[in-house]
Image (tube, rainbow, N blue to C red; front, side, top):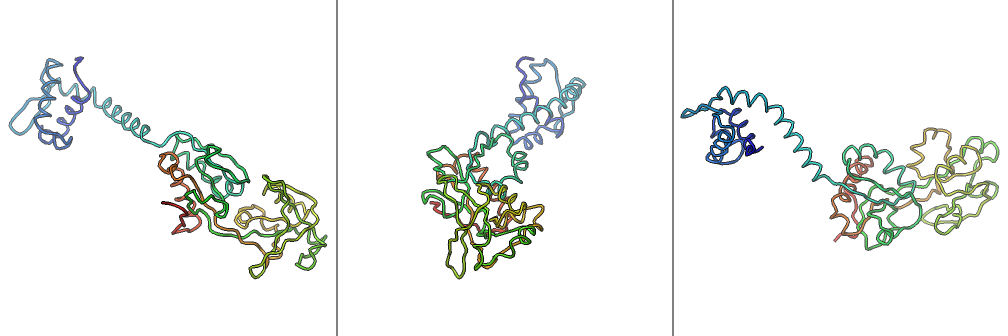
Length: 311
């Protein structure tokens, strides 16, 4: 019995199911002599016949029927385990390091984490939420998500989000206290300040009109470097808050955010996932890129995403 192999039992089951050696050979994709030889070796190792043979058909002996009954469920279980093992061995696995801003995390990753891990349970996402510029190669990241104008020309980049605006919003309480902002009376108003993480500089209010930009310094009752904190400042009536329009659309209480100065909102470039040329050849990284393109393109109706710098 020690010489009995899984392959021989597999052939035995195929013969029993198909009713002939030739049919079993066709099912297994091997030759009929190979099937006959495997059956012969199995019967020799068990020291008993398993089939009665005729010219066209074979029929299970009593011993063969017992063997079939006792091993059928075990063979199915083993086939299933082997299939699962091979699937896991060939599935993408390992660590993928991603750098992106909080804005990009909110719009691109946050709602898709569960689905990603259902599809790729063996990939670990190491997510660094950071608003500054990052050197992917020097800092060991596999890919990043940034605005198109912030990407090194040596990187491959695939568009995830189209261009969009930075909206300006206030609360009803703010309007009651300070009135409606206009370009002419901004010196009478308050701005929730934004500080760049990398430089520490505070971003002034920038208005656009007819393709021209105007930078305006305003009183700032609060300064922060986080979009959620800016939204909290607007809710509290502290001043005019800047929020990207896709973020505004996600707010559960967006009805309380009153848009102002809409003729002067800035337009930002598209958002891309970017990575070194060699990274897309790594199975786990390629899986993340493909997942992002599939889910974010569909969500934002980007049918023909732009690709930068791919060779």
